[in-house]
Image 1 (cartoon, rainbow, N blue to C red):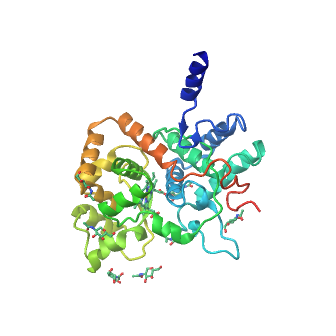
Image 2: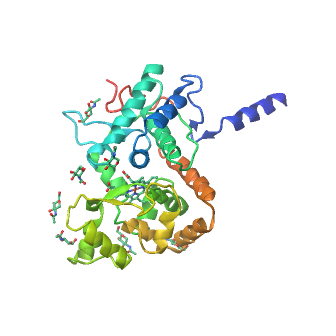
Image 3: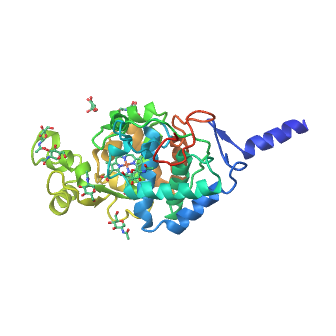
Length: 323
Ligand code: HEM
Ligand SMILES: *[C@@H]1O[C@H](CO)[C@@H](O)[C@H](O)[C@H]1NC(C)=O
Ligand SMILES: *[C@@H]1O[C@H](CO)[C@@H](O)[C@H](O)[C@H]1NC(C)=O
Ligand SMILES: *[C@@H]1O[C@H](CO)[C@@H](O)[C@H](O)[C@H]1NC(C)=O
Ligand SMILES: *[C@@H]1O[C@H](CO)[C@@H](O)[C@H](O)[C@H]1NC(C)=O
Ligand SMILES: *[C@@H]1O[C@H](CO)[C@@H](O)[C@H](O)[C@H]1NC(C)=O
Ligand SMILES: *[C@@H]1O[C@H](CO)[C@@H](O)[C@H](O)[C@H]1NC(C)=O
Ligand SMILES: *[C@@H]1O[C@H](CO)[C@@H](O)[C@H](O)[C@H]1NC(C)=O
């Protein structure tokens, strides 16, 4: 009986999630999580823009070959193109930031803390540092050995995806419509380049030169076209969530109801009854409710196809596999 009580206490204080575990490094590197958190809090200059980039990096990492830090691998001279070359502008500063955290971790406990866990912890701590939601990050992810550019292109959702395509892509990763709506809420912060969406949304909808996507509010579209995304391949930066791109809030969803989603994939969330109902529920609920729900979906995202135990390795340098 006492044995059972101790067992259930242990089980509830160290919840296991898939095969990841809260506080996985508590014996092997007890300061690991604190090192990450302190570094993020001290070093996150230009906080919002970096936090957005790091959150997006975590998403891209998890959607391509699972959360295994394959997004950080450099190509070798002989090798084929890697994931990080598929989106060269993803986050140059993000790569550097992860490298700096990782060297602190290596100094403290060499070869213990994986790059995949580092990304997951950094993304969470960065979002918390800008006043966004907290979520639990169980750890124990192992780093992958492979990174292939074309995987990023086939696995990641496109800003032109319709609802069916988004639902299918997320379902393939074990994420449901609710997760899709919540995780898309990350677009409450950050920026986009016109070149990422403007050709097919503002300049050449359905292959009609000059045509604007009719699902976009016409005033919003006209304004973007006049002031920002004037030409094809324009790399001008636009706010993801005009007016509140620095604040992690519910404004993203309010704008969707005003047909002011930036990407087709954002606006598509209003085209499905289930998804629209979730948006309305979120808008009727509190910010705390959104934060809690977002956090639960992030926990799920952070466990996509993870490697644990003796799979993969713990990289010494996040940009290259151990030799
Ligand atoms: C639902 C499908 C999604 C699509 C199609 C999509 C697409 C994009 C695109 C095209 C950009 C702009 C990139 C640029 O031009 O620089 C972007 C930015 C961003 N995305 Fe997503 N995304 C999706 C889901 C997510 C998810 C699940 C997250 C995180 C949980 C996320 C986080 C972000 C953030 C934070 C930014 C701003 C990055 C910055 O400011 O540097 N996105 N996304
Ligand atoms: C902050 O981020 C913005 C957008 O990414 C960039 O234009 C600006 O130069 C950055 N400022 C600093 C001080 O890093
Ligand atoms: C990436 O960013 C650089 C500098 O901001 C810019 O010159 C380049 O055109 C961008 N590329 C894309 C594909 O947006
Ligand atoms: C959604 O997009 C897919 C391709 O990604 C296409 O086959 C399908 O017909 C589209 N569905 C609708 C309802 O437009
Ligand atoms: C959209 O919502 C409806 C009703 O909730 C659901 O049955 C359907 O499968 C969803 N997906 C698509 C792609 O329409
Ligand atoms: C406009 O879209 C059509 C169809 O996707 C494409 O063939 C054409 O090259 C595009 N025009 C420009 C100028 O990009
Ligand atoms: C935009 O850039 C792509 C590749 O960088 C190129 O193939 C395309 O022709 C360009 N389109 C225009 C209209 O300049
Ligand atoms: C990875 O590539 C970047 C950019 O090419 C370079 O600055 C960095 O030193 C490389 N890192 C490693 C560990 O090879």
